[in-house]
Image (tube, rainbow, N blue to C red; front, side, top):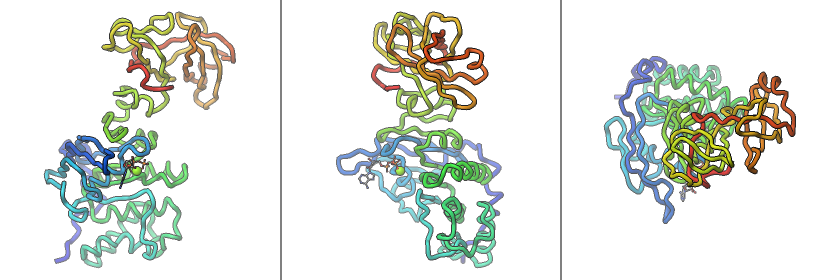
Length: 374
Ligand SMILES: Nc1ncnc2c1ncn2[C@@H]1O[C@H](COP(=O)(O)OP(=O)(O)OP(=O)(O)O)[C@@H](O)[C@H]1O
Ligand SMILES: [Mg+2]
């Protein structure tokens, strides 16, 4: 008997987006291509209804991990459990996911309707159900009325929305997105970003999106998995990743970060040039060289020079704030400070001006020396 489609898409799972049952468990997953290790002992749990982003530089293994979850690439070691079932050795067609790739990958010789209906037809869903479901999916991605068009007649953003509708057609338990927005121009990308986010929240479908765009990850994800060279550097909410980076790599990859060469002093202090500054508690031995990381927006400037003094070497107007470059007196080190436009008027900053520099200790984190260039 042909399978029938159960609940309407718009009502599925929407009530449980924050349930905490595990959807996917990845354990000890390693992938080698010859002698090259693309993924090294990955462990990760993804909760039901979560929106997770894999974020990292080119070549860090994001796509490989996503393809492994889909069964398109076989891991060299490790297991994958989806909703309690071991899927480690299952072929893609026996796994429960929908996928959207970076390039649109629609069938060019099929209409929008037929592209979206493709999987449903393969599963021999009844014709009337297919029509109803395709109409519903196209409404969901704002493309009602485009049924008869061919992909070539659609913009990039429209094609990606068709690809999204097609991926959702079988009501997959897991939606996999590999850089679905990266081929689009900035404006379309921003719009589609919020559309995908809203759609995911409404459907409650567990979603993994690969991106190397930190802004995309920070705005869309419930949790971000930061990857580098085939390992996971940190897993956390956008706020955790931004405010409490677990490594110098994460600190430098997300947002803008100042890295200052310092020497460790007491367990919550460092020496910067001749000045002792507060920082978050650390375990570095006294006298050990280290790097102090602090965000430009945490650096405060004052009219009156204090213990630390900086000379303004550049001012960049960025609308809501000014990004001020300074050279720290007594050192050759440079630091960026983001000054809200309101305050910068009060400081009336000019090139060459000497100002007080304050590095709040609760925003200054210590990493091993040589971790990063700012
Ligand atoms: N089939 C393959 N054979 C050999 N090496 C591969 C293969 N697929 C991927 N790699 C290598 O594995 C590493 C990870 O590749 P992957 O495509 O997962 O990176 P990525 O994080 O998705 O990068 P990007 O942001 O550029 O898409 C890269 O060094 C890549 O060259
Ligand atoms: Mg990739």
